[in-house]
Length: 283
Image (cartoon, rainbow, N blue to C red):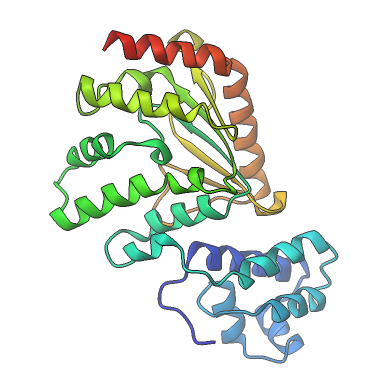
């Protein structure tokens, strides 16, 4: 299979996991190439996500690297076997790659846990709210990219709408519910949209009130995507550079603990809904 000029986030993650398996086996790229009877450049291109790999080859690689975690191997096989084109690919030449990577990460996640401090989460933003956010960009976005960003942002809601939607837990700070992005009317409609989402069985929303004070992770928004197995979990931070996703064991543990603490200090779902209603009625 020829290399792709634009490897997807899923291809990059698969390559990173194959590299991790090689390193855990104590093999250099030269040794792995000899073991698999291929070229060193094929190993490096595969690990970078630039060279496609078949399910059969993933199993062969795992066998040669003496990986005994069959659940992980099966999950990696599923990653390379899914060749469907996601809706986000329509924006490949219009938006930064990280926009597409985040949408792809969300779509394939088994579950999502999101925290956001000052803005509504991308998966639930209304068209008017998203327009107001992107209109504030400096320098102003070109018209075509502006429209593409708004459309892409709103379409991220599809991950929650589909029949096999993942469980979604949102931990949102009270500040995000009160900042009048786009004005009072836009915020009122946005709050209504968010409150309607609480009626979904797979959606849980908890609000961190101002009274909670300081807490770990208060300076950033976090997207934690659960993979098919825990080893394939991924964290994406709003301050991360374009295309950067975190999936080392230390990072996953840190952000799980942060999100656990946020949920502990947040209002329960019923009290959170009451607060959203109170804020909406004040607008």
